[in-house]
Image (cartoon, rainbow, N blue to C red; front, side, top):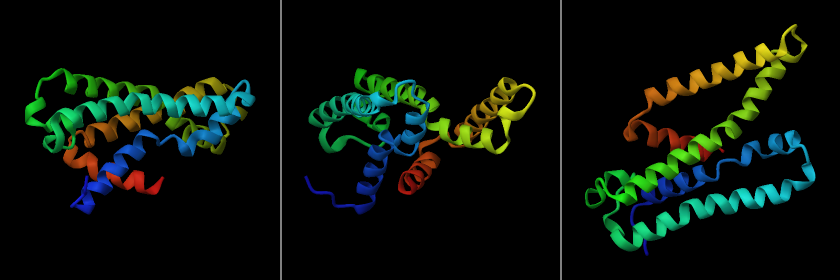
Length: 162
């Protein structure tokens, strides 16, 4: 297998890196764990789970469709409406939904500390407000970048910076 277009390799690497994009939040997760001694097991299981989530889909789709597979896979004509596209879409959606709380934990916590939410009269309400604003902001960004043509460059930029 030879990559003839360096930009396609960069995009593929960025997409795969995005799947493992939890690295920046691992310290926050460890500090918030009830039993930090289980951190190593948690990290190992998380990475193994992510690999088991993506690897079978990647291998099967490439083995069946080879170089005809487009990026994103949902744009491949031969796969339109197939079970493979539905599984991939479900897997990606599931991954995003399950990883979202982990990815926003660090910036949310940092903003809560900056705003001194815990020092306020009603810290729970402050945390709810900060976290609701994060969800609102994420929703707006998602709506603004909802097409692959807009999302791919942002994904490459974010993956390159993390």
